Image 1 (cartoon, one colour):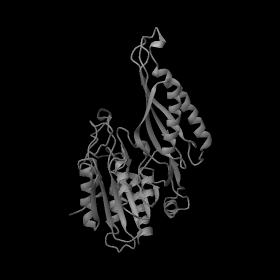
Image 2 (cartoon, one colour):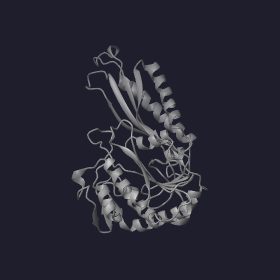
Image 3 (cartoon, one colour):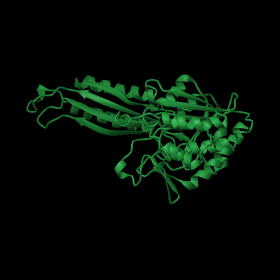
Length: 382
């Protein structure tokens, strides 16, 4: 099979819809993207493994493609899914890659289907060379929704390698730290009644008022106790995202729901944070007499930090001329770390274009990214 040129590869990847979403009306599989990648990599000598994600009825898969063998190796990793899109806000078809004014427009062009053709082209330069350590191209499912693809890799303990580059769009600046993320829902059940007599009910809204105050106090405590100057916002954040409760001004509020987003910094543990939230909710429940439950909306991503002296960090800094930085968005990096890999996040494109109508990747980023990945293969695989 003749391998398509880089632009044609991205053209075909963009044309294969692979939206992942918590909303079942949007959610779809990624098998078409995975099979495209596998059929391009196999002629280059890669051994490919397509691994279905449990519970997806075979519609969602991970791909592990390996060139060479050995105990160490280098991973180029990316997710194959995209976020949903606002069709009416796009100036072109989101699933047709458009080359215009030095930009390639298309859904996922920068976040992050655009990384795969660059990684494949870099690998092609080494297809006929004996590798001392293997090169692995890893493609995952559902990064934009549940992280189920990355979690499945951790659960299986596979693949194993020594170094990993996750090609999220960073403008080719190496990233060695990012915050974690967790999303929780707090639901309070009170008792409705006629508003003229408060003794007839028990206001869920008033209990939620106490919860809000306690969460704001917890946020202050966390920010005082945890600081990392490597981040633009050095402490953890806790966002009170949305609240819904009650149904009429003349009824005591019988039910109220709050959804929050908490982003810890490295050194903080998501499960410990949930326990602290549960403790404050138990106090409010005892004081108010309302029933209070917490439900995890998104299992979360741990905070990520790679050692500044790591070989992969130092190599990326030397190749790009950029000192490693931190970002606020979360990635699959901590999952690859759990598999024993020294990991950085670095790829072409800008995160500012991600999740936006008229998403694009700047063509000027492609060649520098290709040369950087080639140099990393030469450094860690030859």
